[in-house]
Image (tube, rainbow, N blue to C red):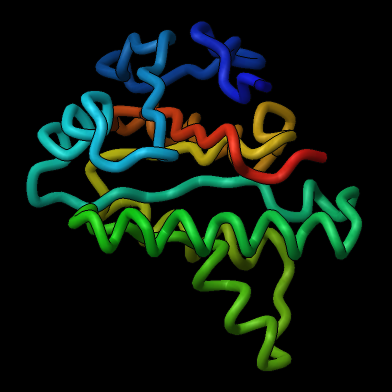
Length: 165
């Protein structure tokens, strides 16, 4: 069995905040393969009536094949529905954006990140979907940086049954 998330997530580069940023470097890992679980109950209690922003790798800046990006999107949409069904209000920019792209409304990364940040500001927790490649995703790295700067809790969401690269 492959462990997708490490206990100690190495933060790349320097993420300077406003002096009040989270000092969180060891992000709690939530096993989302089984809901409810003790770790999931912890997440549900932490978020209370808030909203989770779900970060996940998708295109890897165009480096991922269309097939891999589609598999990542499908896994992320499935997790989003699982969280919503379990009572965790979740915003997934991938689930949201893929539906627009499917209708021919294609936009670049910079355009999406600007809009994603507006949604992110209203979320209380960042959940990182630990699909293969999440550690090297520039989008996920940026979303983790946002959470650190804006004092939002970060949880790593893993499912050992998710796709493999």
